[in-house]
Length: 96
Ligand SMILES: [Zn+2]
Image (cartoon, rainbow, N blue to C red; front, side, top):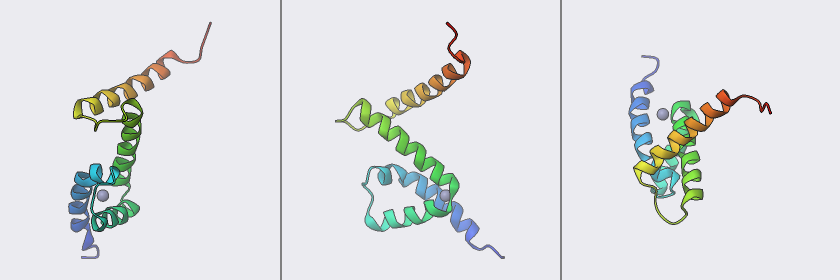
């Protein structure tokens, strides 16, 4: 049992990912923020989730500054990000 934290870490991941929305929105309690922040420092997987949430939030904020984004809008934006990437790859360099 060299790594007794491993199981606790997995439980932390689920908890952190559940709370990322609040964290990104600055809506979580200070004690939670601290815990999530500490977890993101040492967990690349949750950090990636966090950065994706930040990116989506930035896009959503630009698209509609006044309302919280519904789940469908998130999905649409995610789809658009993927579509844009595919278009760029397939279109290749501009040949006129
Ligand atoms: Zn994690």
